[in-house]
Image 1 (cartoon, rainbow, N blue to C red):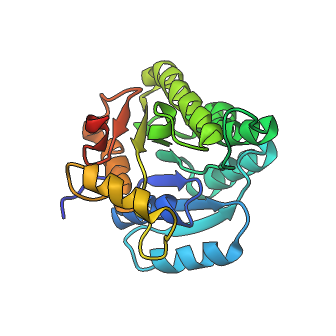
Image 2: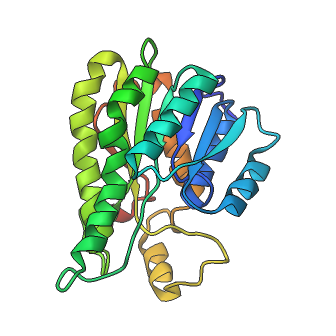
Image 3: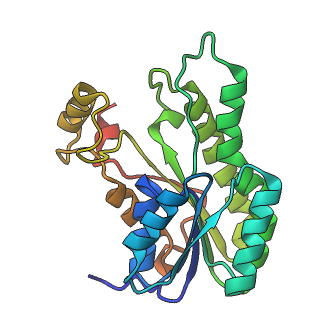
Length: 251
């Protein structure tokens, strides 16, 4: 495998103990990054994730933090700074989603989804930038096609991801001068493996429509995130990179 030049970097992955977040953590840790994965609730999931990350070139640690809470986010960034002295990569993957329609939606659940999407970068941007001072920093947000396309009962997360992509552009402009590149990776429905039995007909139809012939996997997203963290990607600023095997090309 090619060396992406990430060995020794310090990475934080929010929501990094399962699913896409864990795939990103495995990719970065496998490239030699010292990787901090955050989780809000399940200590069991955190222990399982650390077990999967053990033996990889990078050091992996888990930090319990509900990053939608200012004090929890501050505590996370302070702890990382004290342990590692800096942050090179900050991947914002954590999200919440309460399914529901736009007409008759519960505003509180929509606001909660938006808060989970925005708060870690909106509140933490200053501290993250300080921890990245003096080096080429990378901030990558994980988005979805629901930011631009209408997905049934997805209004909360769709609005949240649209707002997140907008925030990525604003942060990119303000942080580029400090050597920090801010971007996002987006995709459509994800193949979560054999344990995922939800909407099998939808999954099969989307896989058939994808030019590459299958659904996106968490590893596909992790690979795209890692590429944005390389030195060679430093001139990419404020972009949303779509990693979906070409599905979006078919509307």
